View 1 (cartoon, rainbow, N blue to C red):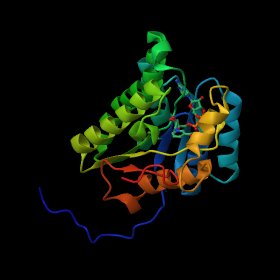
View 2: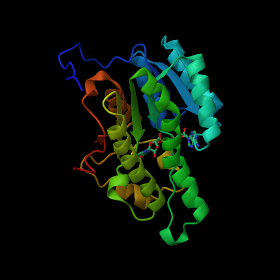
View 3: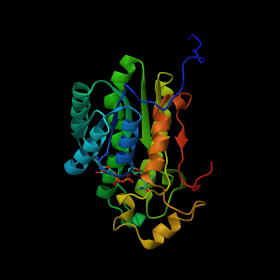
Length: 260
Ligand code: NAD
């Protein structure tokens, strides 16, 4: 293979001219990432499941800032939904240049009380969805010879945590999948992951989150939750040319919970 030209061009955070598809973008980290990508000049496809009003609000906010954006409903655990959504996005907005696999759920319960159904629901939502989305988007990226994928994992995928075995297993799986795809599709397509620590989103204010759990989560050097924007900043970096030598990396905006 010819040596790449490593002297070329200015490196910027700009995503101008790029279509970015973000799963679970009606709330939390996905919403913040949609706004950040739009701010950086991307056209934004806002995926949601059953949250039309919130997705429409994200789209309206982007449009008020002059960003081309559209909402697309799909359940990312279902192959048929994913295939249809990717076709719809490419027909409506153009070829997908960047994908953020962000949709996810969390659940906590003692491992011995975990049913097969609960295990499947977690693994389908937090891991299989990443497989389905990548499988749908990568053929176009390969044809065009370029593309960026960012997957949202979690510090718990590295640390493990009692009462969160299925979530931790799914997020560890996201890291393994990220590294495998990064190797298989380099150098033209870059695949990286973000493994946040605790972030102040709806996910952490569900009935599943006990006061004890939150206290334990705050046992990190920065002793606070992240704002969704702080995670979106890492997503934006990994989507931009500034990170063009990043391949199969797991970046950790986590307040110091993991120090590899
Ligand atoms: P959130 O609940 O606001 O966002 C998750 C989004 O995914 C929601 O909008 C939800 O509707 C969507 N979603 C769930 N299942 C879906 C499906 N089948 N199809 C399409 N969309 C679906 O919470 P968040 O904190 O913004 O979570 C975003 C990601 O960040 C998740 O993958 C989560 O595991 C990860 N994460 C969160 C934290 C945290 O502390 N909040 C920490 C580390 C990682």
